[in-house]
Amino acid sequence: MARRKKVYEGKAKILYEGPEPGTLVQYFKDDATAFNAQKKDVVDGKGVLNNRLSEFFMTGLNAIGVPTHFIRRLNMREQLIRQVEIIPLEVIVRNVAAGSLSTRLGIEEGTALPRPIIEFCYKDDKLGDPLVSEEHILAFGWASQQDLDDVIALSLRVNDFLSGCMLAVGIKLVDFKIEIGRIWDNDYQRLIVADEISPDSCRLWDIETGKKLDKDVFRRDLGSLSDAYTEVARRLGVLPANSGPVTRPTLIN
Ligand code: UDP
Image (cartoon, rainbow, N blue to C red; front, top):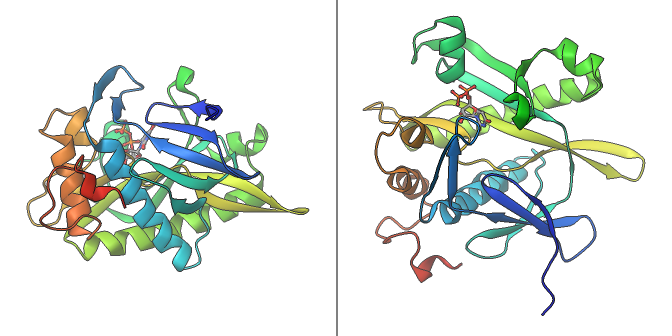
């Protein structure tokens, strides 16, 4: 069989050409990176968990009318997605102060924010994904004003949906990052949620204990990352409550 063509390889995922024009296959790796890839490790089963969790969130978003790139999961590590033109921004939505917001503004981690705050970072690893303002985005043509209005509306809907999913299983959605892509339907462009939604790109705290169930476990050496992600997946019903390690073949479909 001919090897399929790799379109792009990032830190945690690989994109391959899809079976039909306008589609791609997104492969989830086990690689974990933090601090712009200065800290690296391989976490067995992370890719499997993130594939399942991203499927869960994107399917739910599609069902409530928030368009995403997700078409269907193909196997343990791969999903079929729509090909998009990625807007070069990381869109961060915050409900509670943490991470770089706390560092930058001196607000204690865990302080509830008076309203969700949206931030934009320019996607450029060489520059360390710097925080940018709407002025920069418009002036440099990364997105139009209409795009930005749509990005903000989409991000707030994703925030409400994810916050509700998490609250239902005793988890606080502190913040998350999404990426947005453009697709073209004839002459009309639409913006849809792309990339992934997983504990790699969210901060998730147990409501009762405050225990971290996200990539901060890796960033801050707080224990087993795969245990934390498995806990999130089990609570959401993405994995059967009594299933074993994530590499078991029972997870194939
Ligand atoms: N985030 C991400 N990718 C990045 C930067 C941030 O997924 O390149 C997520 C991160 O996991 C957190 C949120 O965006 O859920 C806010 O991150 P923050 O700006 O606090 O940066 P950090 O403290 O992670 O450097």
